[in-house]
Structures are given as structure tokens and as C-alpha cells.
Length: 445
Image 1 (cartoon, rainbow, N blue to C red):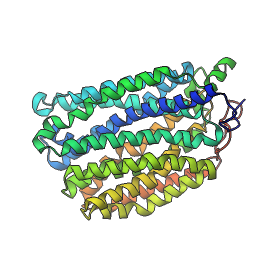
Image 2: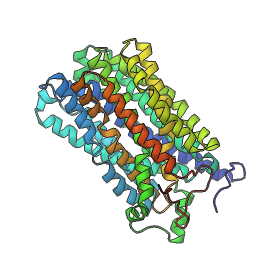
Image 3: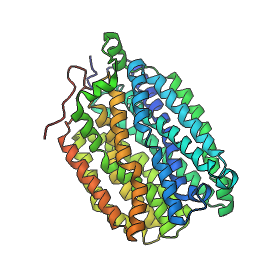
Image 4: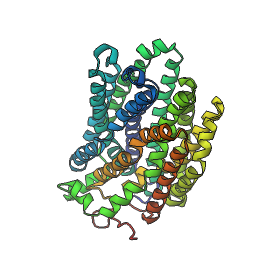
């Protein structure tokens, strides 16, 4: 039996389990995305000088963003492998694995010698650690969102899912805040040791995340499926048997994936490298946007529970297409306040109206036996095909044309694709999560 959507009738233990699940999901997402955002910020303002110092500025920037993009290559692999473990044997242990892999990789980046110390081995080791980060992140979101939404009442599923993005907002706030703080050091000190401290502080989040995740139980949905013997022997095959859900699930996320990485990761680099502003300005603007994300993500999630996922998502999609050029115009004023306004408007308001719903929408497309695998695969393929190469392609476009109009068109194209795919997906807000017998079929064209 599914919950009727009310919090009050359930026993206190059920409400406590829901709170624990949301906390465990959010703190894990915080750690995963603290580490992942930290790498993106460092790729924009640190790594070109530390790991690629022999290159000219554009080549160094492209090399650094290529290293950032490489992490996305293993995300689908991590999504499949860890998703298989989560769907077959439980969400909890799989999520413990992801948090350990990410924490260890990030700490090792913090102690990695630069190019001047060990030569070409430095960027090679950086790439290997980035691949480990990508594998871990590939398995994180599907397990975390499944843990949250499978505990959630149907009428609050959007809110519960969006709280993970609040955790990601806290991660971006902390990572950008720490990088901004240490970027106030003289450049020589910042590049020598200052940037490393935020990476090493990942150890604190790793310990906290492990403690919280080890205390949480399995979801009621998963336990019911396990008792019925309804688990898929190979969850990936269960996902691939309904390819339209997966295809539309990949395509609808292009706008927020491309837009998010263009505005935050490439935007930070554009402000520093192309406009010549201090790194602290870009990092502070990112920090302000992250603070807004913490509050706006659950707002969009709760609104989608009331009026549906499609209106909120499509509103964010259209809004991003409209404001992407004004965002760069505000960057070009070189006014720190307006740079922060641009980050908030583009990322926290419009990108987040889509990102806050994306994982919940994906979780509503797949049943319990393959949900983690389905969410991971859809989300990570979007990241690889969309956002992963967005900073690299943006830098390439601006380097080739000397202007940002190509970047704007790139983002708008992603918005058009996402809007079409979203219109073809079913609306599941307020409905029970699908079971193997009633998994929704995506609308036909």
C-alpha cells in the first residue's frame, strides 16, 4: 500500500525515518557536490596555472576544462555499476560506497604536486582522480533521490527531491566561499597552498556523511519489492526495455545541465580570464547564487507538488533562454554586484527551476526494481552529452569568435530540446511511484 500523501496518520517512527532519509540523502549530496563543484571552480581559476603552466592562457584554460570534462566520461559507468548494487542489494550500502570514493579522491587532489614538482605526471594523476570522482558521482544521485522520494508522501515528493538540491546549494556555497576566502591571498600563496585547503577539508564532510548514512535504513518501497521478489536480476535491462522513458529522460535535462555549467563554471572563468576581474569576484558571485539556491530549490519543488512538474520546469526553461544573453551582458559591466545578480538570475532562479525537479521527474519514470539505475543513467548521460563539455565548448566558441553570442545560442538550443522532451513526458506529480506492473510509458510523438 502506498501512502495517501498525508504526514499526520503515520506513526512517529515513519516520520522519523523520513527525516533521516532526507538528511542522509542531503548530506551525501552535499559532500558529493562540494567535491565536484570545488573541482569545477579550481578548474576555472587554479588548475591552468598549477597543472598546465607551460601552455598559453587559452590552451591552459582548454586543458583545464578538458580535465573537468573527463570526469563525466565515467559517470554513466558509475551510474550503472553502483545503480546495479543499489537496485539489487539496497540503497544504503551503495550510497556509503559513493561517499567514500568521492571523499578519498578529493583529499588526494588536495595533496597532489603540481606540474613544476613532478612534470607531466601531475596532470595525469589529476585526470585519474577526476575519473574516480566521476565514477562516484555517477552512482550518487540515483541512490540519494530514490532514498528521499521512496520515503516521501506522493504529494510532497517534489519537495523531498528538491531538498537534495538545497544540499547541493550548501555545497556550492561552502566550496565557492572557501575558494573566495583563500583567493584573497596573494596569487603566489593561493596557487602554492591556499587552494588546497578546501580540498583537504573534504575529510570533515566525509566523516559526517559516513556517520549519517550508516544510521539510515532501507526505504519501504525497496523492502516491499524485496519481500515480493520483484527485484530485477539485471536492472539495466529493465531500464532499456522501455527506451523512450530513458531517451526523453536524457533529453529533458539538457537545458539545466548546459545552462548550469555555462553560468557557474565557464562564467567564473569568463569573468576572471576574459574580463580580467579578480578570481574573488567570480567566486563571491557563485557563493551568492548558491545561497539563493538553498532556498529556491525547495520552493520550486513544493510549487511543482501543487501545480505540476511541467509548468515549473517549462517556466525555468523558457526563462533561461530569455536571460542567457543578459546574464553575459551583466558580467561584462565588470560591476561585482551586477555579476552576482547575473549568477542569481541565470542559475539560482531559472536553472534551479529545472534542476530542483530533474531527479524527482526521473525517479517517477522508473519502478523500484530499476529506479536507481534508471535515474543514474538518465541523469549522467545528460551530464556527459550536455553539461560536461559545456565549459570546454564555451571557451572554444569564445576563443574562436571573440564574442559570447555562440555560447548564448548553444544554451538556447539546449532549452529548445529540453522543452520538447518535457512536453512528451508524463505528469506524475501527486501520483504513487510506479510499480513494475504500472510503469508509465512516455508519450509517443
